[in-house]
Length: 112
Image 1 (cartoon, rainbow, N blue to C red):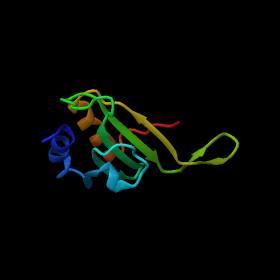
Image 2: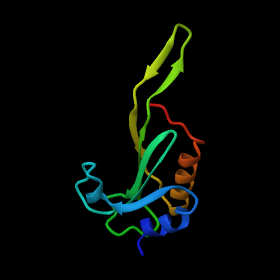
Image 3: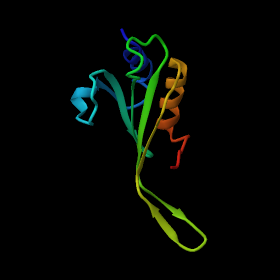
C-alpha cells in the first residue's frame, strides 16, 4: 500500500472522498499516480505524491485546491471574487491528514 492509499484508508469514513489515479481525472496531469479528491463548501481538492519524490515514504505531497467563487463586502460595495487555484506541499502523512480534515470541515479559507 502506498502513502496515498494509506491516507485514504484513514480518512475515507470521515469525509466523502474518492481514490483514483490522476489519468482518470482528466485534469491535465502529466504523470499517473494515485490521488485522493473531494469537495467541500469551499471548493475541491486533490492530494497526490509530489512527482519529485518517486517513491515517497511519508514525505512529499501536493495538496491542490480550486476554491469556489465567493462574495466579499468592502467599504464601497459587495464584490464578487472569482474562483482561484492554489496548492501547497504537506511534508508528512500527519500534515496531509490535517489538511484534508481542515479543508473538508471548512476550517481553513485561503484567499489568493
